[in-house]
Image (cartoon, rainbow, N blue to C red; front, side, top):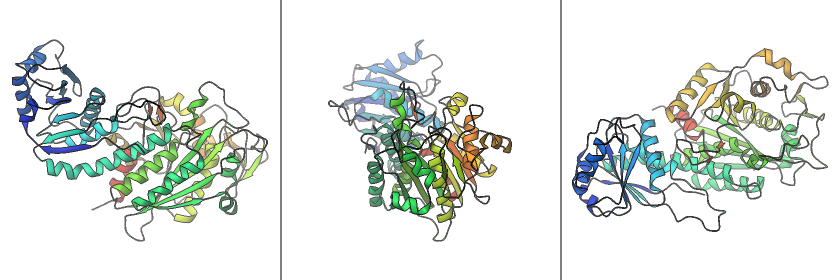
Length: 490
């Protein structure tokens, strides 16, 4: 698994500016004020920093911008990176600034002079999130990323504060690795094995195989995977860090390791990206890893349904009727609307077994959410205003885009079936909403619930604020923040 780049806090020592190789970053405020380290760098470079500030290129310095000075005179460093940032910036501004430094550093080691910056921990998190690469399948991978050292006047305090932030960064990296993996590597069995390995972190992990799923009555989940040689599985991960008898938060993830669409096969163009259709399960896995690493004081259970949707002589057909674990029957109109068939059984199982305090499911569920929200926001659907507001607040604080979408009984009419209790699609209108309405039928009245449609944010074709193009790890930070806010009271 990819590990976040090593980041170390050290006592402030401006004398190292003259002897450090690699890259050095100093901080300058948007109005051009220099701190002690920046003034020392300015003297070493014979006024180059001040000349930069006075130039047209700096005018109205944009916060978060990095301006590199290559091979600065008077220093042995390869580059002096001038980071424009308010001293008392917001956590998100600090993270984005750290990400900007990571983009600039490339593979080089980096020394950051942030002596009196209150948000140095968030700066470090941004560095760790952006300094990520997935090159395990390249014959000539780039050299390992250079280490990052941050000089700070309160280095011991910052080191202590960094540990839980790096736990979150590692959870994000795990999610990205899982989403980036090709389907011939990340089979359902391999996925389950990687999750089972997290018992080393203190998680309780249980893998349910097809015979057990059949006994439980998870026929909607099993029908999705019946056309594949890869066995369907459900993995249950438990973190018991809260009060002994406190009901857990349940996180449920869609884990379709590859989605051809089944008999309702997808067009060939772009199908290679369907390796990311396990993104919801990836976020659940990464969140559980982060919670275990930082020893969260909360009870959380993560459940993922792992299947592969393939066409074959044994595949589920349009027109088939299958019975869910709940007992409701579903007419399968389109085998490419398979994620909801996986989720509904796992959601019901989560409620029956764990009686959760709340439940959140995540899935790369619909193309319709991309039409509606693009790649900037995940769709948020909920039956509980308070839980939804808390999640949206956590997502905003984490810098992860999320937008609430409507639910309503009028949409249920689109799911009526002539021969079964419901059908699995409601047609083109309001596609993401009818998918959420389908899932809501498997949420008990007493269960506060959020459905997150992450189809537009799990994997993107351009860089984001915190990630290179590809898998983003969206959701790990927001869920971690929500758990901290709601379930880890002092």
